[in-house]
Image 1: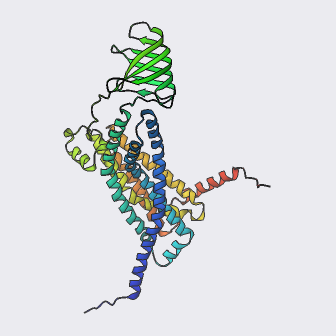
Image 2: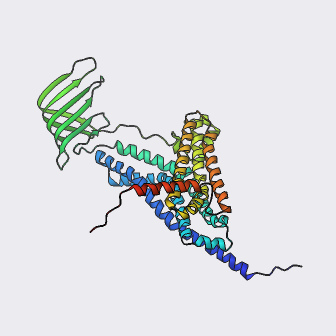
Image 3: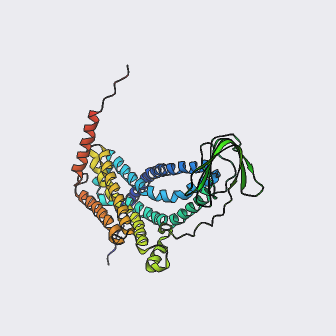
Length: 412
């Protein structure tokens, strides 16, 4: 009978490894959260500015703008997560390398593979979140954004306008003014374009004008003074008339049909709906090629997250003897090429020029092979792998450019 005696040293080593995992988790969480927030805000900023332009043109309320921006968060969060995670891993490994903590870990018997394990665990959790975002949250938020944007863009006009802004009513009437008083109803430099039933149009310009509510809901009267009217009818010469005072009826009643149902675009379908549609393409309004390309593209982007530590760790260690920016530049070029290769493959699949499976999974397989090759080659000699020379060349190029820059003179 063999009795295994509990080894205090083994138990102590186990607790030390657990503390190491917690240490790496904590060290990664902060840069990951900060980078994710910065990248997400940067991506949202440009779209939010365009939403404010919509606010100025249509007069929709600020809460609607906030709701539109909130529906964009899942989309940009899915785009920002891989970038933020890669930068976080690269930053943590670089800091551990600079502080010689990596050397201490490896001197204590820990391998590069064991040090990588906490990052892979974080990557698996991030992959689950990414699948949830790409597969289920984004389709609904994208449809909600489009429906709300359609409603806001064609909202019922409240009879007020702003200077140098075109108001396009559902009846096909376009109104603009060079100047508007604070009430939004007294105008100067008026421009009015109306579509005629026979396909022509009537353009009216006036020095001043004033808007009055009509007797019917959705009707207004525009009183214009000192202007001219040009009527353009197909097959007839232009007719121009000058006037001292003119009344024009401006209709802004909304008679549009409700927004379409969700599912007419493959980007609005969940992963389950895409898979079901691929099994029965005749029951869907989206083609099989578009559904397959969308499904494989989402899966490939989510499954790329566990590969990022295998790329970030060797490149961060390579840059120990030089500027760490060189490794980051090389990683950025690799990720940029991979992202565009996925987009190009998805476009080819949607256009039915290439089957969806090889078009999407071939770039993924090449990227995975590169990451695995780079990581496995760095296990034997940490800090030295086949990309060391490329990183060194980038480092020398950056150094050469810096030497050509003019030096700043010290202040007297």
